[in-house]
Image (cartoon, rainbow, N blue to C red; front, side, top):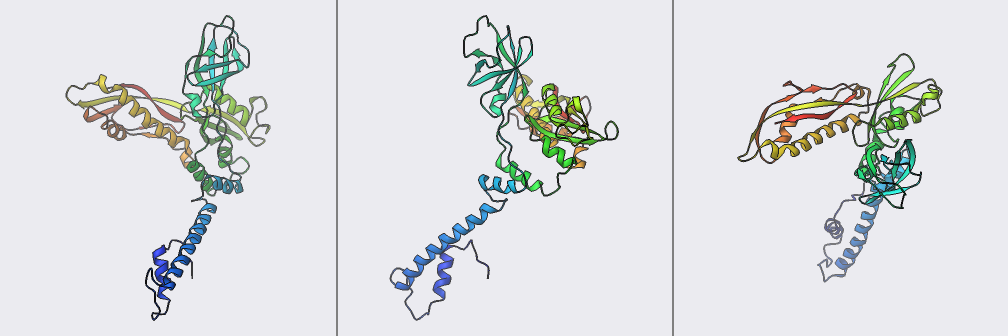
Length: 361
């Protein structure tokens, strides 16, 4: 008979007392039998709770992070570690590698020269927070002749440690297909963990036999910088030795990495406003709504796992835009929305994600 781990104290006590001779005193609070049985039942319930908790620890669908990581290790998987953002800084003079600067609450260190007066700086704090700030840098130590120092662009986004539930999904996905020898799953499993990469699509024979095309999106679900594309190319299949198996790609695979295309979507809105409201009052909120929707679509793009998903294009839906804008304060109604001059949904190329173009209302 299986053990009911979810049985309550009351039900278990009732079952025990039901097995006692009815002729004996079983009254609550006054009988030795009741008191002894109640005390024993408490101990058994505690043991059942402990047993249930131990079972939850060892199954991947209920395991907390520590034990889920141990289960993942059995599949050769581990959560992605937090990484530091790398950014481009522009100065009025040359600075030394290792110089440190601050902006807002973060510090940055110069790690590499790009061109004269342009450098790569790395955030000293790991995680997505390193992507947040652009602007004037303040030197931590005095630098003679330095009059301007600006952080102008995120080159490789920093990432937080992989979320427990995302890792749990990755663990279960590992049972759906096996990564081996340069198959689709192999490329995805090797490229996605690279710093700054949010997702990748894989295309075979794009430029003849033996060629592989990888299209990547960054970890902020935006079009990656050329610096990130170049880094991924170097890690996967360096241009100086393509097809030689020097990088992550198998020998004889000639791999080329491309950025996802950012497809501008112009939006014309026909909005009915509340009294005393106008387009100027809601423009910023509408932009945020559209940006959030497009980011959701970009996340869907990044989550592609199968051949079919790699070859499917995103659909930008008018109904989704209208429904979301209806929730903006000041909007009473919306109709006849146009996307890129038309009144139909837009199906993007499989290698493209949407980005906000000109929005008018």
